[in-house]
Length: 88
Image (cartoon, rainbow, N blue to C red):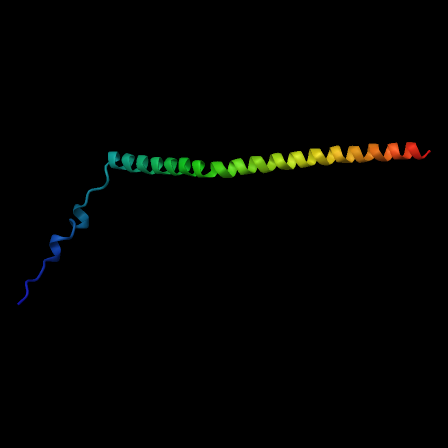
């Protein structure tokens, strides 16, 4: 005969005897959740910093390209005007 294990030892108290979480437990659970969320946001911010830098750099490159296009257009117009004046 093998000894039988009692399953009652591993079970918690019956549902009628289980206590409801106290206000302190609820506050601690909520604080833990809030701190976890804030920690994850801070971590995400650190992880997104390189992406933010890339976006700013890309935006600067686009601005420089746009400015250089305006400079080249102006230079082309001046060269065309001078070529026209020389041909007269």
